[in-house]
Length: 277
Image (tube, rainbow, N blue to C red; front, side, top):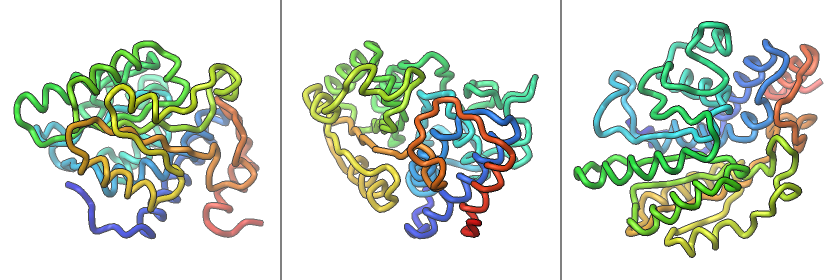
């Protein structure tokens, strides 16, 4: 169920716990999606500990809110969040990316119903979300659909077809969060394809939109509240996140697939424990 009892301070602490887990998970491999996970930790904390209406005992509950991770490779933060929320056992994190494990680098339905759709091919998540939102509305469900896209995914034409459909159908049970970290495989997104202004483009497609600091918990919670109360339109949150957020010597490094030494992992955990050397 929704965890409205958590204060902003408690949500921020949850985000710090998630960051520690991301560092531990990637450090075991010495390479992985570290920067994205650290940057998105506040978004995932707000979603899973304040916003999403879920059941810990019945992952197939018909009235659950749906969450789709379109950036399906950003799984260190996703699995860490599921474990912290009690939706998968903490021991599952030890199986992250191991051969034969369902906890692959790209989140897939092998994990079970907690993964609503396999989105290994970037740019597909919003299309799936639109279909789910339309289906839920037609059957009179109060459930909502949330999708997280990476900003680089906006370069995919399929995203804009889905955005046009969502606006045309007036899917006010749909909320999309763009993780605006300015990072993709080729480097800084603006050096690949300039995308700003993002919000006004979606507004032209019939969406309501806001842009926030994606590492400001108060701003995130306020934006999600606004999305829930907006009628007649799908809602877009453009969340500017800082790659490596929470670990000073990693912040701002646009490394899509980051390497981390055991020494740097220890330093990062010390920073996150508030005991920086």
